[in-house]
Amino acid sequence: MHCTLRSAARVHTVQPVIATSAAAFRSALAELPLAPNARATARAAFLVAPAANELASESARDNRYMQMEAPFDAQRALVQHAALAQALREDVPTIVFPGDATMPDAMFPNNVFATMPGKLIVGRMRHAVRQREATRADIRGFFRDVMGCEEIDLSRGDRGVAELTGVLVIDHARGIGYCGLSERCDMAGARAMHEAFGLRLMFCFDLADGEYHTNVMMTSLAGRAVLLAPDGFADPEVPRAIARAFEDRVIWLMPEQKRAYAGNAITLSPDRMWISERAASSLTDTQRASLTEWGFVIGSVPMDEIEKAGGSLRCCVAEIF
Image 1 (spheres, rainbow, N blue to C red):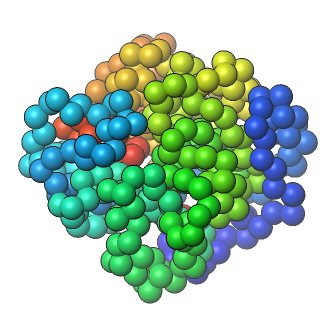
Image 2 (cartoon, rainbow, N blue to C red):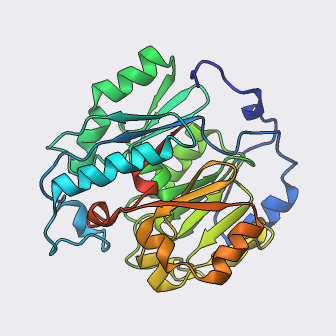
């Protein structure tokens, strides 16, 4: 999993494209050459342990999923987080960095840090409480000095807002990114991520009013299928175009399933989808049968205490490619 072992599968000759409408995306997708044999899932993962005794009130300004009125049990969140790390080790090596009480959202590191072969990408966060996370010397140092990664730092300068794999859902098998625009990502940030991740094609679209992160309403399942909550998109043509990109291997999520974080899933191996226990219980028998047909089993752990902070299982997992 060493970062200096850059995969030849990520060397593309196709000219990268950013599409900003469903029609443009369909057209670009039709012209996209077959992808090289790229790795669809990560080689490892890293997490950041919960450490704060309260939720981040600053983040609650544009994250309606946060349960600010509910009591937050920090010890229970830590126990659930440890159980998550242990469960994920069934699929990939999983590292846990210590938390910091001054960074209450740090248990959602995938918004701030991401990797591609040979690269550590640092995001540009909207809120100051999260911008502090991007300065962590231990995480940067691990990937720079131990893993030998090149650091691509979007947090410095003025390249828009770019909250990495919170706003950007990537089909790594084909090098396609799905980027939801909101307060947490603008077009400047999308362009910066398109370049940093080395994507072949990016589809940018507006999220529905009140939505903040694409990964709450969408998951690429190892590039073979997709979870979609259509009410999370401003334009109904967008989820339909995404579904066609996955040849209609799609689980359509109802609004109540989205609120239960059924769209906040991750595949760390080709044959298992991880979601929270609450999310798993919201799935119907028909949805479960489709997942089985497509070759996925469901892994789940309790995450209800962590979910009070406005994110769920996928938000806790930063992938190492």
